[in-house]
Image (cartoon, rainbow, N blue to C red; front, side, top):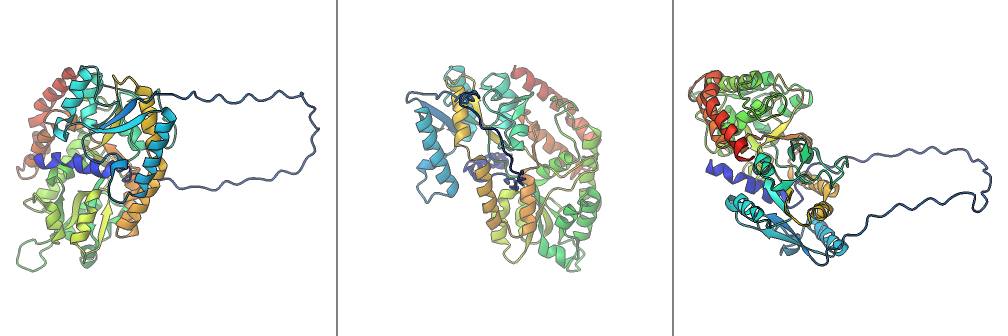
Length: 469
C-alpha cells in the first residue's frame, strides 16, 4: 500500500491550484415581455413612505490579525509562485488582496509538517487549544469520524448559505457528516474511469464504449461481452496477447471497488447511511462475483494482473485500463500513435445512473478552537474561485482532452462523483485487498472471502467508533 499512499498528494497538488475543478453550468437567456404603456396618477410629495434601505452587514475589523490556512504542501500561496502565473492564480491573488483589505488582516498559507505527520500535528496543536491554523486542509478519511468526534473541527452550516448554487454537489455530499456540513472546496477530485484504446477498438471491430455510454447501454452485460471479444490471440501462437482489461491504477483493488459501488453497494454503510460492515450485502456480493467471473471464467482481465497496468495498456496489451483522470497526460505522451477514449465504469444492474467514486478527496475545514472561526470561513469562501474557477478548468480540459467524447465524459464526471469512506476504518484498504486476492487468484467464492474478513472488519469499525468518542 505504500505506493498508493502517495496518491492523495498527487491529487491535492492538482486540486489546490484552484484550477482542476468541475464544469461550470451553462448560461441561459431571459425573455422579457413589453407591457403596453399606461398612464398613472402623479404621486404627490409625501404620499408614499420611503423604502428602508437594506441593512449592510457590519464590516469585521481584525485589526491586523493573521488568518492562517493550513496545508501539507509547498506553493499553496499563489502570491509566492515565481514562474508565470496562470489566470486562476492571478484571480485568486486579487481576491486575497481584497479580503485582506476588507477585513484588515493578513492571510497566510501555512505548511505544517509533511503528509504523514500532518494529522498528528493538527491533533497536538488542537489539544493545546491553539490549532496551527484557522482553516485546515484534511483528507475526508481523516476528518470523518475521527476529527469530528474528537471535536477538533466544527460545522460551517451557520456560516454559509449552502443553498447557493456556487457550492458544488461534491462539496455538499463528500464534505458532510451526520447531517452537518464540515468540508469546503470549489473543486471536485480526480475521477476514476476506464481509459480505452480507440484505435484498437476500431481495429478489432468493437462497439465504441462512449457510444454505448451515451445510448444508456454501457452496462455490465455489454461490458462483459466487450471485454471477452477484445481478448485475443492476435499472432496465432495459442497465447492471449491482447486483453479486454489490462488492469488499473491500484491493480485490481481500485477496479473492484468501483464495480462494488457502481452496483449501488458499499463496504461500510447500511441502508440508513450509518457506519456498518456491508460488503456482505446482496449487491456487493453480486459485484464481487462479476469481477471473479471476468477474471476466472472469461479470463478477459490480464493475467497475472500487472503491478503497473498502465505500462501494459500503453504497450497495447489491453483495450481498457482503469485510471484516474490525472493520468491522461502521461498516457497521451506515451501513446502518440493511438487515439484514446475515457468513459465511466459500466452501470451495475442495481444502479440507476453512471457515477464515479473516489476514496481520495480532501477539503478545507474550520478548526474548532480557532478564535476567528466564523470570519475565517468567510475569508476562505471569498478567496475561492467557485464558478469562475470551474470555467477556467473547463477551458483547460478543452485543450487537454484528445476528443470531444472524452471531454464530455470528464465534464459529466465532475458533476457525478461520490465518496468511498471505508478507508477511514483501520486496515480497511488491506482487508478489502485480501478479498480481491481471494476472489481472483485465490479462486475463493465471494461469500466465503467476505465471511473471512467480516469479523476483523467489524472489530476495526467498533474500535474506530469507540476511539473517536
